[in-house]
Image (tube, rainbow, N blue to C red):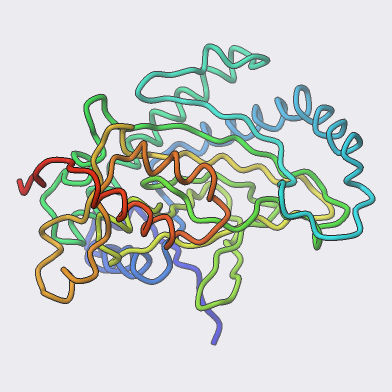
Length: 319
């Protein structure tokens, strides 16, 4: 059976087809952990500017550095699988709680300005999506945003990546398989060069490149908060032999001191209660994840459970 990747027209949420669109989002969250949004409200012109400036910046500031790294490590001539690195050229921007865009070297002023503007739009979209998830889950409006808030608000940042042509894509992954640690992830990806795949029913499925779309996926924190009703899903990037793939992934995550735990409203039945996920401080999870990113998520959850039993994080708020 051919599986169709969930494609959702966001503009339908404002009309008569809202119920159908909400059902599609629900199904995608429960069965895929991923979906692709069209008509999401972010201007196509802004997206095209972001893409043009990202590609220009890569060519001007990053491409040569990447080629030198490949030459230094002798990666052109590898004969066996490389499992400790990725075929990618990246840099990170932080937007919240405070921006570091001004401190990143080599960025043109126009590029800084455009990336700030793009981040504002993505932040709005992420918060809209969290509210739609609340609605589908039967949680009070704003519940997820509140849980993510901590004392300083959410953590929001962008990983800007380019995946250059790779001579041995069977031996080096663009990005090794992993689930995302955080909350909700919004991806603006190349519409010509493919490579992103997710794992569904034990098979790797391509996430289709599509012009002006935003790909959404759920991170480990949403799996915990929904007590496993929604799942974070393994995904990877396959390097291509020709063409450089652009990927701009923005992570709307809990604040570092936010306490994450299954929403009490979702623990209605005894069966739910026996499957309870751990309760932890987000920053502690991230410290653990840093060393275990490319491994299964279940042992991470188990480790947090063990920590949870030795730590008292105070009473769970039920409001």
